[in-house]
Image 1 (cartoon, rainbow, N blue to C red):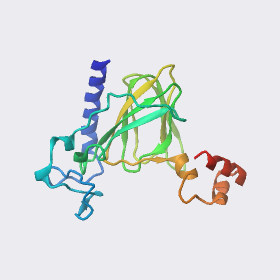
Image 2 (spheres, rainbow, N blue to C red):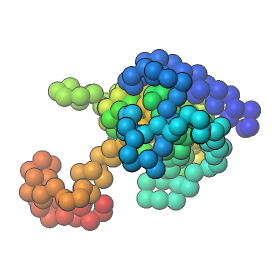
Image 3 (tube, one colour):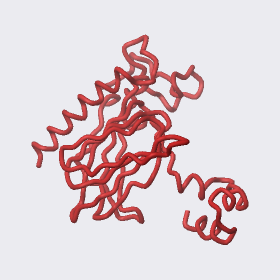
Image 4 (cartoon, helix red, strand yellow):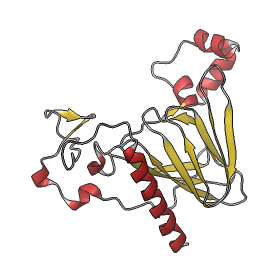
Length: 220
């Protein structure tokens, strides 16, 4: 298992290098811009101020933890372990990041989008059904069942999902073409916004009555 995990980490690293070439971030004009979230005064680059390069250390480019199983004991049965600019400050301006996703039996990463990144996912263990939906007016579902070692791409901004179809836990690792890809969970965004979207608007949008909207809202 250890050798397999190392192999897929190397595969993900290669994917990250490819994504970096085609990322949406502007090309860096310096060696690096290590994020300094404590600096609220300095000029920011892509949302983050740069740390003085004389104070940069190896730990600014380091993270340990992708070998640890994520806790999937939640209502969806999945857990994401992110490695973005918030975990590795040295990713700032480099246009790439990674995540590990753990799935309980029949666990699902529900429909969501990454507004700033394309995602390329590799299955480490288990069987996953994955898919994304094209934009209006076609709204086509593009879906496939993946096995260990399979790779699938989710285009930037499109709604996508994964679900564990196997009878054991599943694990995947993904690379994203932004150091801060963001995530918009469809159900949480619609029914859990603050302040809430007017009940009448949601009832009209989903063609249900107000009582149904309120019942759904209570779940989020």
